[in-house]
Amino acid sequence: MSFATEMRKMTQDIAYSREERERAIAGIKEESQQMKAEAQRVKEEAQELVMSLKATRGEESTVLRKELAQQEDQRSREMKKMLRGFQFSRKADGAQMRSELAREMDELKAEVHKLKKDTQNALEDFSSQRERMTEEMQKELSQSRSSIKREVEQHLRNVRKFLQSQQRSRKQAGRQLRKDLAQSKFDIVSEVKQMQDDFNKVQAEIRADLKEAAAIWNNQAHVIGMTGRTKPKKKKEMAVTQVAGREEMPEKPQPRNLEEELLKAIEEQHSGITLSKAAENLGVAPIALGRHSRTLLDKGKIRKAAKLYFPEQVK
Image (cartoon, rainbow, N blue to C red):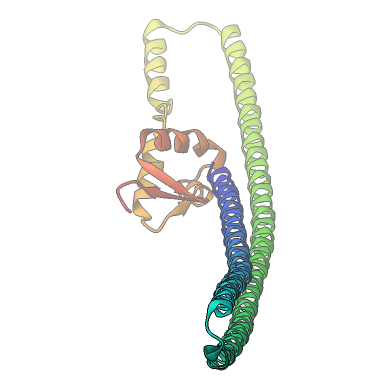
């Protein structure tokens, strides 16, 4: 009974260990998937930022070109209007107006040149800023990838160590289990052999007792036969002989209460006692105490641990 309980407990421990390993592996896989999703999200955000920068640069360039075209068209219209007005003005003012027009044209050209230069500088600054941001984002992305890679490698190393430790513990548990099974088998075989020897011994004693009883019975039958052929005695002498015979007959022995004797023997040994040792102390065969030990166990008066029996009140 104790051996079956230990086997069931060991099997449950192995099953629980396997479930813990599966839960640990599942948790590590889930963390790895979350890291991969985070890396993908960072990559997508970087791509969206780069696309937005490109779109912003294109829109700014389009607005600048549109404004330049509008200013150029407005100045062209103003110049045409001024030229039409010059045709109706006086010739005296023609030279002055031409000089003013030339001066305004130079100023316009200077402004256009300055505007082009400012636009070019702005585009160059935007391009350099975009390159710096791209480099920084690529650097951060590379660092994030390397960090994620290191964490994943660390998790994999931890998983390998965990699996190796589980394999070692499983092998050790298997070796211990096989050792315990071999020891239990050896103990069971020894106990069965001892029980067989005790049974053969008791059987031989019973056969010897039966043989002796048969010899006594035959002797008594012979005596009775011889007595029946002798002459009858007087009634008084026969009565005296019968009384004397009753006095000489041995008293019938009282049956032993092995259950109480076994309980007393176990209570005297608080450190535990084996059934064979108790049988040796009581002068009986261990097989004769088997039924009484089971009765005491069922009544809860004793308890059993491995091969030892203990009184129930001693913990």
